[in-house]
Image (cartoon, rainbow, N blue to C red; front, side, top):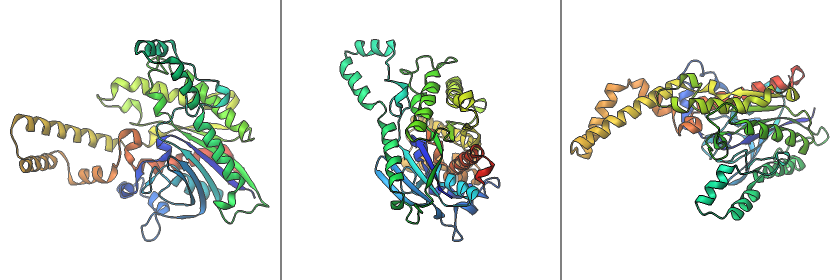
Length: 377
């Protein structure tokens, strides 16, 4: 049978900021504990997958070889590729190749904009704003034209290069059997969601329609440029913070914007033209609400400390013991351990939590397996 090849594409969360030191937290919850048996070997070390090969293009160049930890945003991190590869290979019961291209802080409206979406057009508000600031519109337009679609082209270029020389990544590749482009996962969104200039009506229904349109063009163009008209396509819908109905008081003010964006991102999966070959995975379902609650309490503690420090002239040592006293009052030992072992990054990077990221990767694999149909097993 041909080698199954999967493409993983996106921005910083597709790169992946889950530090390997947060693996331990996975084992602290009986629900996620089973992940460790596939993510670690007998010595409790992160598993190196002997049947999954990967070529990964990012900011610092190309990294390739057998799938292991370190194919995230840096050597000591994972992204969705780790458990995606593990569970996809388990499902297919044959070697697989992953081609991953991801860069932090990239948009669909410009960086990944695909050819059929046409040139990026500035809104009237943007043009007025540039004029007010005395900026050179001609220069801005030229720069935007240069950036438009750059990462789309880098992605396609890398995929084509790898497919022309699979043996350089996977030495045992059988050229007689060939390969099959089996699916693609798109996990992006942040840079579009936060851009008020590009989406001036983002706090209203339909304010992100341009994102849905651009994603539709992206799916069609990838399929055309890689000559796979029905390539199964999984949209990883951004879900930082969890489901918006669970947002706390501090997050409530942008719950509407977040939901409008998520709906726009998932929309192409509901279009008749993509019926049966595009799906969406709501990553909000893998968020860790306990970590959110503990971080909110930790922020409260920091607030109290600020007040105490500004009210009196506490020495460094006194501050330290005061902080420890508050910690002991506000957290159990287990909660402090959860906070310390579970979080390694900011909210917008899914807290750098391997517990969240492992579930996301598996979710992508399960959705992909479903799109591929029963014959894939």
